[in-house]
Length: 339
Ligand SMILES: [Zn+2]
Image (cartoon, rainbow, N blue to C red; front, side):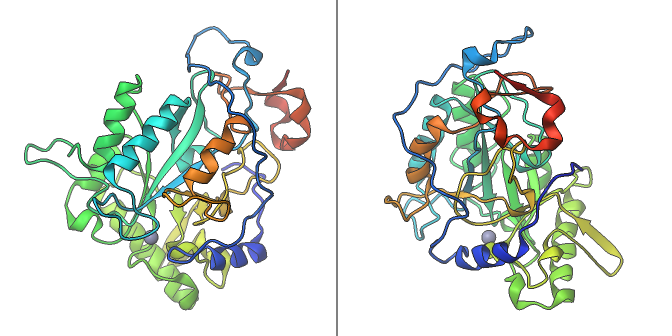
């Protein structure tokens, strides 16, 4: 586990309460990212030779969009839903803009290994609903589900191994045995979202820990090989004892998560930058609403083109323009390569 994570429990509780799953996000944790003309995106390239970070305008202190998805529905019912066509179009746009997938666990661990010029994006799916993953009778991935669409879009852009992070409850994907194991085998991250999708603020300390231990057991029973290292708060709501969201135990079964996902409403900071807090990772909602108060992907993605993380292609060093040096977290000074 890396050191350097910062806790902001008091402000977190406020943010989480305001940014609940079914509520309207009404605050942000930081200033808006300045708008600007979209800069052309360099085509991601992976080369054995160290590329010139300047040539790809690497910025590994830039922000990372962590996108939150729920259901794909032909007729969206809520703010979090998209049609399959909307989801496909958003993925197409992201890939065309130079984004490639990493998991929440990758970001939390500062383990971003992408081709030079590529930008990390994190796709998160909550509640393990049927539209996220399904299989055809022959056992292949249903191309109409979110995973099927992701695999197809990624392949069309030369990415044979896209990843995403799935936050699941008890009886995930309508109780289909084997689905979690298949997702894990596809390289997807499986994360904790409590056993019953509980509002953790309404439970006492024992109840919080019981929910998380039982939720964890659902995953480890189906996928013994997986290491569950991240969780998403149902409704974005922290327990009253906020520390129990990431560490605790119940009936001698312990849990410890390196990342806690909120519901709203900003892009995440680079894991190498000052202020990065894996225990309070904000997410951008998928969705079609527009306007400055919506905090959706529609609002954010155009703004990120000038402020986003851009990889130098070398996971062993951290490249960024010299002008941004003050944003580097001191723990990463030895790996820093300002230019
Ligand atoms: Zn949920």
